Image (cartoon, rainbow, N blue to C red; front, side):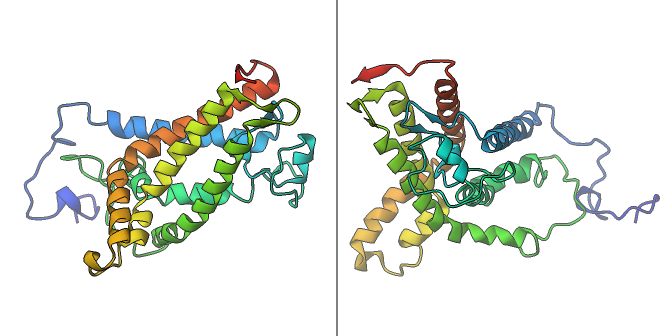
Length: 272
């Protein structure tokens, strides 16, 4: 205990050199955690507002924003053609139209290995940065509640694969207009680029890498799975890049669909 009755821990543990300075950094070490926090909070606020806005989610009778996919609420009837999988959830202001998928995707991202690293270091401040003491008295890792729930990530991965297939379907059917037939617009390219990056993020996931080849004892006995494991491993090295890129493309895709649906801009047709 210190003279003030506060338990000593970390850099204040007895026997360690006494350093009066708050940290030993002379650079702006706080910029990275601050920018990470700002980026994550910006996405959460934008996504939360859009998920409950319940309008401007279907444009040009074919563009469905990923924040509303699959659109399974009875409220989707306001935009004919937006409910590809049917409407079976009640229409309520507190229930997102995509209530079937949004909780899964949110928890999947929240428990993602990269995002854990990002918000542990930036929001939870454990660890903050090299030569910067942590504010926590002790750490129990992910062995106790609630952090033990991070293990749900490996199971949510399989559900996310299904949702990625739904997003792919949305991007493909968007090439067909109900009256004009096959068309290609700027919105198609945005939806397609977004879904490709979503697949890169999903398949570069650590859980995907483990599912593909993590339990194999002899790669030589499973050449096809070994080849798939090497591909996933190559993607895995860029998992952090895809994590941030998909946050950006999700916002861009939703913003574009919202602007077209609201009449603020017109979708530029390239074909058809």
